[in-house]
Length: 353
Image (cartoon, rainbow, N blue to C red; front, side):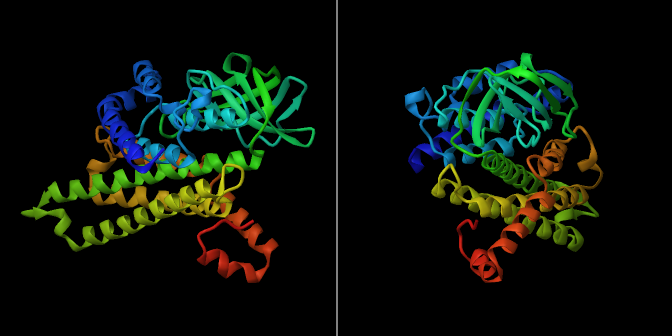
């Protein structure tokens, strides 16, 4: 979609999330309450189909449109698998399938997943929203070729383990499980993991931006010894460092989003994605620490919204590869390419592989 249409969509989504993804809704999900009305309205708006072609009954947007939407969702700590469903629907559509309604999630990174005929076996840990999604989408290697598979939740075994943010994560076990849909995948298993990591970087960018705004606003309003605490040098230093960490997080995520969109779904922006996930995950802990420190005791209370974002940053930091995982990928890529490739890769806005 063109820039004007995207801006209108993002503005509408932002207003909607402000009204509907309230503090009570986010806290309710942590207590095991599925916000059915919120998800229904999200589907009615067509958001899970934003990157699905119109020919397949989607909105017809691009990968960049999808990622921009996820940054807005991250800014509002939307406690439903919107990110996972939008990417799952894109992968299904790109492989020639028709996305189904309802929430989906991604079961990626399971190196021991194997597909025999129409049966899937193996285990995947840390699957987001595993117990509330209607289906699992994965990419596995079958006969030496990447194959996209969709499995109904009721056909798999789920051991729920809530994430540190209180969302229903879990371990999913496929035991000769029948596959609902399978097709030659438009992306490799490694690429699917890259796209999921990119998805998380955009959510982290949105959450980090919200953390900064929240901390700065609080420090301006909080008065101590007759003046706002934002006037104290120690607090100013904290907020300055926080702002620099947030700016780097946003810049790396946006750069990776642009490179991935321009380079194409199959392999665009691979190096940028690895760099962005490494940097965003590395800064997540510092952003959380600085924001809580600058807000003092108030920032540590459950009643305040800050934890909605900092705890998600902690969780998203590890999702689909931590900074150590992606940092190792970068190191391996440079080692393979040779020393002469390092400087051009650092100075050019393009992926290296």
